[in-house]
Image 1 (cartoon, helix red, strand yellow):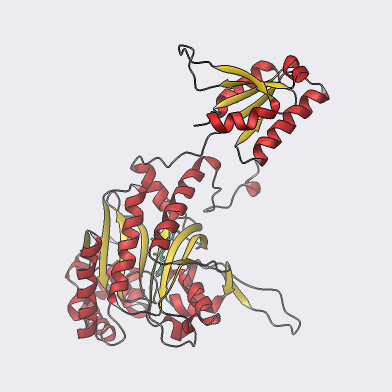
Image 2: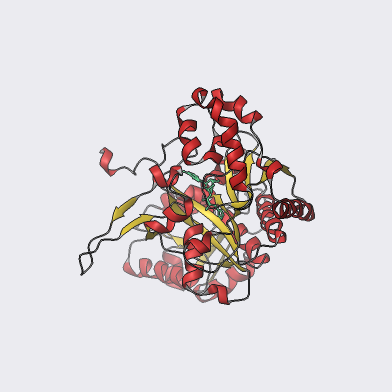
Length: 434
Ligand code: HAM
């Protein structure tokens, strides 16, 4: 197949064989989110570029290198708007919260989104896609640390229900506008004399985004990171108290968390609590989240504390596969209608009976194109249907069908097949299906 007709690099088809994982995660996540009072929201995939630029931060990898941004066609006045495919979900949700006046509702407003696609033009590698999907939750309008613990506890409950084990919950506080600037100064003071020995990325981070110095993966900088001052030792009193309460409340949710003072996150909007859940096998982040108490004001809205997380669904599926977790399989068909003969009466009867079963809500399959007896029975077997419904010339003449129970083995003394009237088929299947 010519290259241009293949899916783009970093973009993936989600094939039927993987769909049970998606359905299991989506259903589990939505069910638990609703348990905690979250309501679903969907936001558009395209937004004005400034929605992301202003919130994620100019000096982040996402905004600097990874956004799919372009000028839209000119409007009637000849103006062109620069728009972007969303790289993350939080900014759009906060924009929607403000645009629809949700700050006038009882607070907090708790929202979740399911399998929303996110676009980041990252270097393709294992676990890094250019289009990935997130399940996320955002609780807006409440600064109480109880909600920080609640949202982390909820996420942990989702992973537990999915059957995942050995998930590391890493928690940190990165302070607020009162204490973080002083900490950043301290961090820069510490790095200043070491800078000439730092990797190129760190030299840039020092000027543009000093907190990210702590996130450097380059071996040459690990010792510097290990000895760097920590934000947790430099929090102001209210931030300290907030962080302590989050940790106290987390125990109520039985979350085995660890404080990891190197979690700084790759987006600029975070304040106070930040967290990541990682796989114990390779430390890959399954989700990321935290508080963003200043975001609504960036959009010109009222002060609105907020906290949330985004789960990378593809990453969770990889981890489930690694842990050998098999999602519940799709229900097998109740009936598979086969017919032996090509007359119009025969094909019409098969099509009509199949349609009747489906209209009544039974999962029913059939074959097409007048295949051989052997081929049809093979298909019926492969479908895993409980019953095959067989119509031959005799059945057609008598208005009957043969119902064969495919789950009764040859050694069983049970009656494997019965002949019944076509008009009784539905009630028979309803009575006998497991
Ligand atoms: P994030 O950490 O950038 O946070 O992304 C959340 C999760 O999405 C990651 O932990 C990872 O599992 C997955 N992910 C990110 N990039 C990729 C990629 N290129 N390929 C595959 N999976 C990926 C956010 O997006 C924040 N909006 C989360 C949040 C919500 N914070 C507060 N509320």
